[in-house]
Image 1 (cartoon, rainbow, N blue to C red):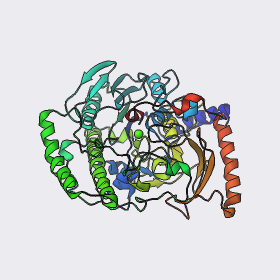
Image 2 (cartoon, rainbow, N blue to C red):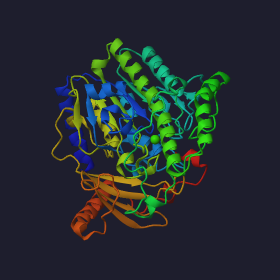
Image 3 (cartoon, rainbow, N blue to C red):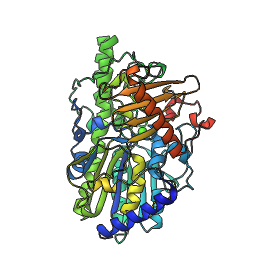
Length: 512
Ligand code: CA
């Protein structure tokens, strides 16, 4: 859509939606967690039934669950930049986590809401290097942040807290809600570090699963045949890539002596049993998988409690009816599928992120949407919900019609994806592609490769076999190549990314 037409449509939408919904500006509460796989939200019904998340599920039960919310670049910083701006990495300039720095002078939805009279606050993980802009108050973790006793930065000043990061972020969010100006609408972004690597649960959640043997995903022992070099030559397997710290074979930093005693009481006997058992091969991988899920899902438990506490606050203070609540993650995540943890790929578990939206009276309770939506759609959604014009250049599209139950006839039928960061960490080759309801066409075109893959999710739901060179798919491939070119032109993707898009090689841990 051309800029002028888009602006006209946006203006029309603002008029009509404001008129239809009474012009009452909603509060906007955004939970944005880090690396929270939809497989680890019970409302999404993963067949493994990994964990119960009753509070996050409240948002789904009372609102809409999005089953195909896709990210434009499946990695932390770039996805956060996409959320704020409603644009792709090649537009907002934040390509990767190793050398990108967010240009805070560009338009973001918090800035627009702030200018329109909203009180705006951000608590938790930021990870965009430059200081936040567009927030009356910000209280962030430096860099990746720490799970236990985390240092934070409050409006530019270093502060330090004792306790567990998810609880602290929740406490600070509730404190801000209490102290805000009660006569103006608010935007509050609660951005959890959890359940990001290295998956360190609250001490009260150690042992939450009673040493459960988790069901395995069908692709845990994937041998990567049927696909190209990139899938075989990555560095993100549970088997080979996880460190002693990831697996809790060594204690994390920052614990107080009292906390350390609790940590030791849980992990030490189990680690001792592992050493005695002398597991190898498949048995050792299964052990690692179970340890990983214990820790990851333990982190999710605290996030779910956080959501419950804040939703309870809205209920107790009469705010629930006029607050648009969103739960989303910055991308999906692998919980053992293809033998992996981490994200980055155009493949489904990393491409798809959870998105749940509750807005009483506006969104039908218990509804489900399967359209191709994206985190870049949230900025225009929030602006239009608040009756604020969407700036030119935004590449997402408001979800308001979908939220009211009717998908526009011209809603996107294809979605463009781009990934840049290489070679470290995790050694996933740069790629871009087009995603439709059924197919994915992807081109791996990093510094040392150039080839295509094509997946048919209807016949191959786990994406195990590329049919890019199968003559039966020749027409489909040609059409998808054309669609990919059309999307690249429409989105203004440069033919060659700038050299800095791939990032720089530095400490592997820093880049996630
Ligand atoms: Ca992330």
